[in-house]
Length: 369
Image (cartoon, rainbow, N blue to C red; front, side, top):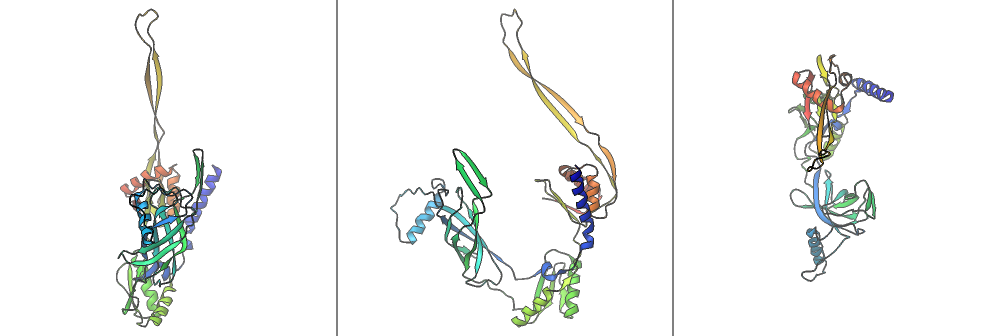
């Protein structure tokens, strides 16, 4: 208990010091250039070379169909009605992210995930798999040995598994075959898109850019800044490089509390404040015990039989709820300290935050996920 209290006070001290440790950040970390983005790729393929841990072909007919089609393209024609019983092959989905400005010949990483009932992809090799974009065009080709970050063993009905075995990764496993057209140098302006909407941060970015390049930046809305840039690609790259390196002090985000109702986790930023309020915190416990009751016939009874019945005892215990006054919290540290002072657990904190928001005492947006 002493160690727990020490850790709690360490967290409070760190959160109290967060406002003092705020520093300037680069525009590159706060915003991105419109049109300069990555694209998602997906493909369907086969993994071979598994040690008996592949798909059960009787339950995954698409794996057998894929093998027959692949062998037919390689010149191997199987007789009609052939029943393949393979255990070293698995059908997989291959996903990758195509970076911005990726050119043909460059290598990208791919993730391989089993879509059948394979037990493990460990030691498998992905066969040549085309990766398509949303326009159904092929942008990369993937192939290579899969690295799985898990291990497992089974014997005599017992099994042991560490981490996940049905998904792996191939570093540099795909070669880019097609570049995505980009409109990087086709307009007089470039647009900077903030990662999150904040009018104050937009204003500071505009002022920082105009201080170096007068009358070149203007605010479009709370998330976009329009900047006049050179038309020549070489000059435009140098211009954007200088803009991305400019440092500003971002404004504090809106006060928000995120509550995960499934896991019971609660996260708050440093802008959360708490008005003066009072909370009665108590627990209600209901205890039900079932006891068997045996009923037997009398000593001289001619008829009768022993009967076993159940008798239930219900007990209700209610812990005393102490009405405690919570002082106004100036930041996250004092809010956490005030809520923990009444003995609230993580699960209790969910109901307390909802009640505080409904009463108007919690000065933050409450989001439940």
